[in-house]
Length: 455
Image (cartoon, rainbow, N blue to C red; front, side, top):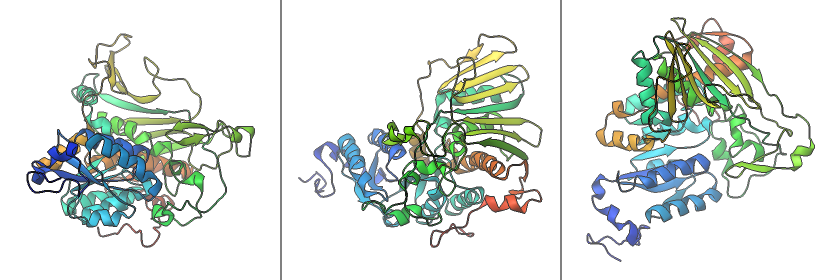
């Protein structure tokens, strides 16, 4: 079938349904999504929803596990009529001159290097939170974004919510007086994700590439897809998983465009067994195809319970708490994941897409969101709109904002791992007279997957 411009519609995977998008193709933005498992499908669905309104096309999907390609291709074909190309090697994506921008939805230990490689190849980038696996490489991402003058959005998608933006503006305008403390909550009762013996990776899984910058270790099913979050080589625990969203809102609401000067974190792994138990034989699905095992044996390394206190140079405080087992909730209506702000004239809470403000000791809110928590605003649309304007100021989650917010969970994890309070120097992004802590600002990269000093 030939279109009006002489284009063979079937040749590039286009159906008659999708041909209309070819009109104005010079203005079309071609995308690649790198990492197409659970969160990757969120990116895919959002971009598919922007096909007509924002003239975008997912040209390529990329994942080191070829078994994940089929479901992702199916979503795109059914929603847009286009059959995307498939790759396991992100270098081939970066070499494609037609691709304008990439979404990086890979494990945390790959975020920085993949972003820098993409920028060096001339691509714009949407990178998931946390933007980096450690503080040093996060700074390198900001440097690369500036050097190559590209648009880089961090996946702190609350920043594109109309209600959340309204709440933050209310705080900045003095709605509860001067904000002196914020509290970020990550109360998510997570069961054990189990354990397994080392084995050979599936034939579809390019495991060495998946490991990338992380130290080599034999394949283990319970350290790979999704469960990588709970091991230091690849993840940052719930502090660096769900935590970045709430820590970002806390920092934003307090107008802190700087690092804290001190941090203390304490916690551990509680409520899960360290030896085999009957629960190990009763798995159930909790997220996509992720299996959990009640209070069964776990080999996870990151804490499931964590309490953190940050202080800023002006003595204002930020508190953060992870509760990974059973717990009460906080706030006026009992929130599990959200934020509380405390000011000289009252307090404000954010949960989901809803906010309420309370004056002094009053128990009835005097201000709040008007649309009952229905989310307005799309972070992916904001990214595309910034690509078209060419102005990084149009981004709601520009990489510099993402970097400062990502540093908060990293600082907490370093304090937790060392078991003591730490003092941090903003100007140098190093700890005060603490070479041991400084070693955790960066990692030893596995050749050839090295984040360069000079990006």
